[in-house]
Length: 351
Ligand code: ATP
Image (cartoon, rainbow, N blue to C red; front, top):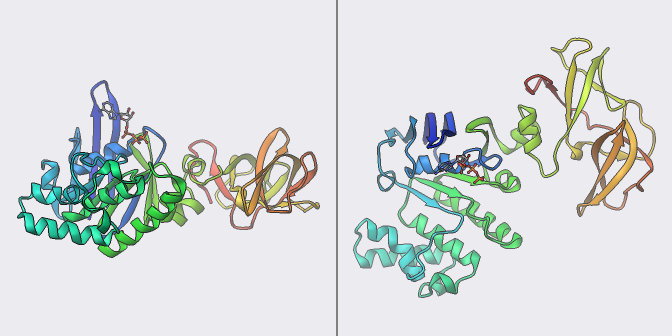
């Protein structure tokens, strides 16, 4: 278990990269850190690793307070975006290196490197140097090196970001299987939401050195707790529309959606609806949002349709082959139970 308590990191010049952050990662969990550039993800990972010392707060691994310990004494393994392999060493030497640092005898460490290399599909590549490997193979060597010293925590900083799209998908599946088999607590930093949603047991969405929401992929995707998280999560951004509480509904973009409890008449709200939950229809529907098709983008099995409603752009989806023509009038009918209502002031979720 990794616990972070009141962690603050200030860099010289007054940048507060972490701001009193609290976090508890369970034993064996695959935990992803997601957030915009500069929100403090890498700093948090490096502080857990011991590569940065916090200005205040503590890091615990299991029941040990590791805050004062050097990186080597924490039993964590970190894999970086650029793999940081030693160019002059062979694959075997690279994998065995952490064991050499731990002063294991040569025979033992070579045997262990061979065993792990075999598990990760590197058996035929052991005598090669990193420059003679593909990006995907280098990434596996970096993983093998991390696995070699049997760490109690894996820390991954965008380990897949240098791979092309196809290799990345393969590596993702591979990483998930490896983590399942080893059941090692893993903290994973990524820019890529699809990666976080696919890999992680839980996701933390960070902003400005703080955590805005923690939940399973499904929770964070389905019920973002603020408009910030709603805006950030999802491959196509969520529609965040201005609405107003009126009678027993909420008036939004010429249509009406159900009104949750806890709001007063006339109150302005933000209505959040993902394009995926806003099917585009070509005949009139009671209560539906309606406007003129402005852009159609083909995504593969579905298409994203941007509709202009009273000067506001609203995105909906339609099955591939059913796309309406631009300039035609369409109706967007929200999927029941998939409409989120946020307060205007602090952007928090009402329902
Ligand atoms: P990215 O996704 O772009 O890698 P990140 O979320 O990992 O970003 P960090 O690298 O943790 O963000 O940086 C957080 C903040 O701390 C940024 O404002 C960054 O400029 C600042 N920062 C990071 N390292 C240092 C440093 N060594 N000295 C000064 N400021 C730093």
